[in-house]
Length: 396
Length: 118
Image (cartoon, rainbow over all chains, first blue to last red; front, side, top):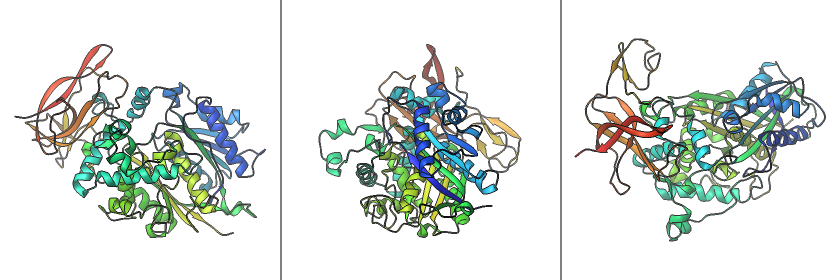
């Protein structure tokens, strides 16, 4: 197997992009990544597109075939990868394996989603289609609903408080305000959430015990990366970053069939595999992008990947250990909570943000000083299909 | 979508693990032999939530949904039909009923409905 380097990255601002089609967004992000890789007028061997909802929301299928045509990348091999909210991570994995195996030398991976084209009702229903079609979906369960039930159990088992959840939301929205690619740019305060009489209107219950500010927004957006073998980089213009390890694991589709529903086994296993393949351990990681579709998930994942012991994640968040400058900065981009969560884009966007961190390309107020190793976790379903990537800066 | 959400669980004939929904192979021992069982008795509320941002297909202000465990070990999701002000807590005993949980093309879809016992 060959070491695989990320030689180009690109992202477009997430948010509500009424003027763009899904294909526009995928193309814009791809061109940015190709330019960043110095491949402006060249082709690639293969393209993998992470997308969850094109067939449902845009009534469009075979999206990768359409993209290579639009980008004049013909006759590159092309596939669309659908794996729910982990579609982006799965597309990265497909590209990684293709290059590592030696089948392809240059691969473009792009993830994108256009979710604001439909009403909130429809978007909520679209994401809920990943729940079990016979024993969950008919009851009207939503992903916020799954997260609400999970949060209640986590709070009861580990004593997680609303203050801890709010601390994650405050941190990530603060960082989102500094990120030009973030959907949510509004800072929030603890006083505004707990003491302001308007909070009941501004931050209503979404899925008890979770409130609006505990959830990521519904976003449009796209992100892309270009991969090639590290051995082919002779005199790179930018510090090379390799995908040093990846892991993926699955769990039962329904929460009810998990012996302990608070145990996110797939997160633990995916992270362990990624660390083992990278020959690194959690304490070697300098910056992480975790899948905080809901504030509780950042806390729970920070424990399950090994940054903190079970039950200690909330205390760590409250103590500022996950802030920029803390023990392990998490979601310095603003995370899904503030950068946004165009589902198919997220897994790719997380890698883009970590590459920027490891290249030391971000402004001081978002850069983790001297970051060498980063982790991403892309959480599909409600934790039933999870991918983790460890990225490492190499000096060449 | 079926008009009725059947609750038939499957007990592995080899190791006894109870499955709901159906799996072709036992999640514990990989056996393919199961006996069908119905949920029995009252149900203990394992967790729940009240959702205010509803998906397409629900024309109401909120939905209360929970996961319960029946006395014979079958676990299932169901709708909790109570007023918004009703007190709920994990561990409380719920009375299972069979009732309408949503409408599909103007017709009711029936499934597990839960109400606090007593």
